[in-house]
Image (tube, rainbow, N blue to C red):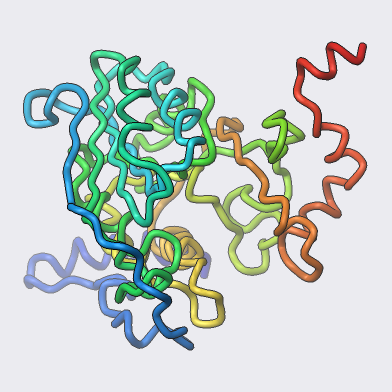
Length: 322
């Protein structure tokens, strides 16, 4: 029986069982997170403490009805400027709330404040700095080593049930949120496709046609496929059971792959829909691309080293060379 058939059967069963005040529940609602954890590395050194703070740029979310919420875990890299500018440039017609959660910052809040001076009037940016990292990587309790429980916490805080995700070193095309909003209509979650971007020049190398390509397709087809978090949007009310899994890495991983658990649960237990267009610009990590035996190295083999290196110069430099 296919996954779709199982979902439909469960829906019909629940409609019948409701009259008896009984309901079938999803496995993810019953699993204990502790039963899913594998080897847990010891906590790393705790970073320096700092005063916690909440910064709000723009109209308070309580004063307006948000049309979309965007969640961004961040260490306040300078690249957050590109990410935020791309959110501000969205053609989505409604108000947009961006929630930024600070893990272990490399800059101060000024890097966000400067960007928010150019914030459109219908955009609100909220920056939550707890004053510490709750990831084991920096001495905290959360087993996820990339942001700890920030995505979970910010998803619950989101002022709209439609939530999209982005990291602070990537950016979106202007139609990203509007395309996701259309794809979400009648579905629990949605995804877009993405482009690979050179890590130095930030030039678009090619579309990713191998990895983040959706359910039961591409490199991970035998494992159900995969969608990168930067390409995801969910209805957080329908998909509430998945939110806690942003902080739970896989059993056989390095503590940086909670997104694989989130995708697996979304794909197996909820209805998804693709936009059919690439609207995410994903910057490739150079060290990971050249490390033998890694997914990054396999990615580089597919793109081609010579082809990738040909995008190392900026567009201006190429024009000068010409």
